[in-house]
Length: 163
Image (cartoon, rainbow, N blue to C red):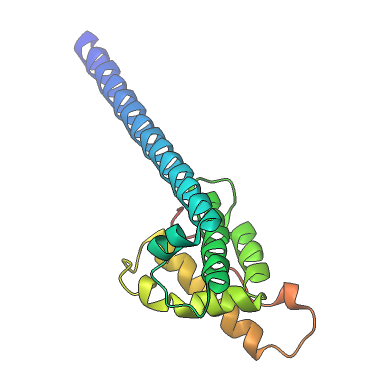
């Protein structure tokens, strides 16, 4: 009887330790994502201030330095929305609403089309690929909509896999 209780306690302790390791790994990943995003925003800020640096950061052909900066800023807006979703600051419905506003902007739509080939290499099941498909669907829904209430167009996809 004592042995069975000791084994049960030991099994419970192992489960708890495994859960704590999993939580520590998730926290480490979130911290890494935050640091990556912070560095990306820093580099983007430098590129927005200096057209020579913008030419290095942007791999999209543009008609002017102004358009390049606009595309870089559109990328920053999209990246920030994606980051908010990936870190749990925004849920899928909030992200969907934010992206719905972005796709109404002509410059954002031009940027999105110009960078389509960038998203082609994403793993289909990745969060970024799923969010990209949501932007594509929102764009199509808005194009096909004949109602003036743009803020009700499109349904957010089901939250099947968090981030």
